[in-house]
Amino acid sequence: MFAAPSAAAERDIGAHNVKITKDYVKASGVCSCSLMKDRIHHTRIFKNYCPNCHSKGSLTFEQGSASWTSPEGLWYCTRCDMDYCLVHGKSHDRRGEYLIPTKEPPVPNAQKVNAQFEEEEYIEVVIYDNKYKFKKQRLKELKESIS
Image (cartoon, rainbow, N blue to C red; front, top):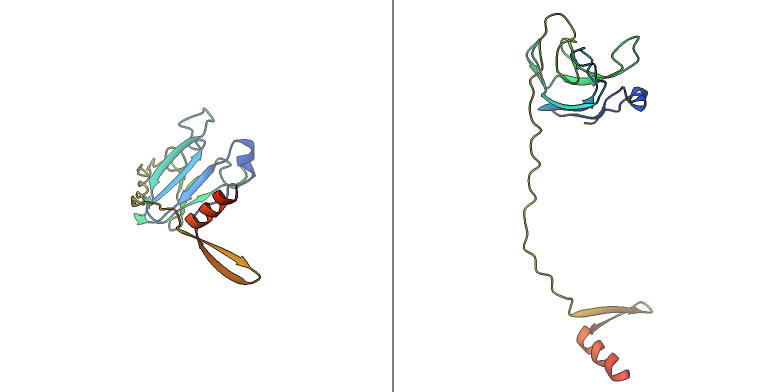
């Protein structure tokens, strides 16, 4: 699931590349917990687990105007409504709980196939709804005999 960042992202304040799975949450954004004041986008990945209510898969993304929520974007728990910094995972209260950092699981490698491509032996030609099959070698011989 991908979340659409708000207009704040257009001003380089809001988050982008937000990804939410049942196992982890990921986004590039600016710190909203005041541990950093650099206003640079940092990409972070956390387990989709709320340390406040101990629920798995309950984190989601929120971003809005400064009047009602973080213009930088934040993670919040859909069960207990706890807010967390997008970059540090620090709770937006005085308890100082943190989300658990993790790594994005690797994309499984596509199975390698050792395919050998052989040139098609025949060519099919359609003339007035009739299909004709010719050997490519024979067409090559005819072409050589004409030139």
